[in-house]
Image (cartoon, rainbow over all chains, first blue to last red; front, side, top):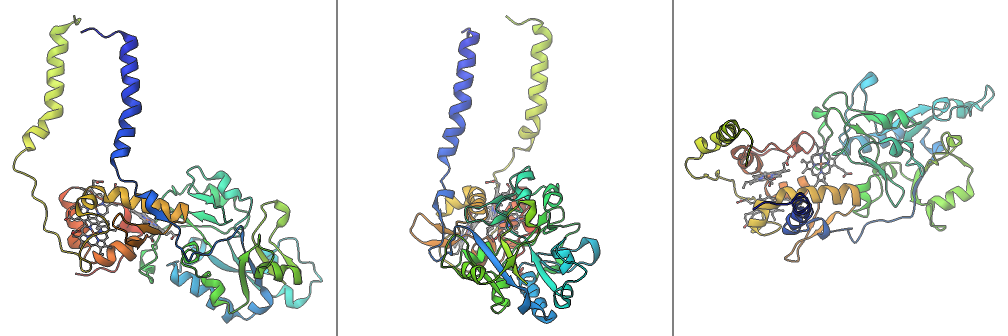
Length: 251
Length: 125
């Protein structure tokens, strides 16, 4: 039998389109059986308000950092290879351009907790070539270590230095067996404790800060963060860049 | 009608022999499934045994995407039970002797999942 070229191409096209569909239909739809947990906390735009006055004592900040880093198995590496989800920075480092030579001493000497700002307009998401970092409906800038190829574009794009690269395997730091580690060659950062939110629990830093950090929904006028922001003057880091950070600081 | 059939046909035969040879030579006795350490907990797996044996890769990858990308961390199994989407917290809670279960079957099938660099469960002997 001689096939015409046109008929051969037609058959080939039909096979290429139907075979994968048939193969996909043969596999159970496991993803479709996954649901949001009933007790999960939901929001239109998650945000954080940090009362820096109440975190002025170093041991209080250390407790907050330890709670986060121990749970998420963040290693304690020295120098430029350090990995951090939540860090401490001086007034001038946290708010470039804000201090003047005459700033009050209690502000000039204050140390601030810094973490991923979960921007509404995140530059890291725009540059990520694999979709490993993405903005969720609820405003969280998610991080998928499985898709991260370690190109570090996101680190170059983030104006806040909120991301860390794993220059080495953080293996010895396994403290908490239920949270996965990361490997050499992937970027990591704070996830606003997305997994805990889906269990109906607040982020670990919020719990450890004993009231000094509020977490809630910016889209809800009755939320704790909205009432704090209505009653106090709060600043965000480098708002002029237009990334719309979601972490507010009461000075 | 093929041009140069005298070269093309033996060439094809040689190609087929080279490609299929290793399979034909290795095709010997039947596949002997490795001895598996039974699950520590539970009487049945999340889905039917056959579904798990054939499809746990697809299930785990669907779980990964559901939890990390879609924030769906509850799995409703076809028998109505629900499970937390977690590799360590769910799979390895029952299959807690990973070396004798996941690892020995993967070794027998020459599969090397790349998960264990990050997903570290407490090893039981």
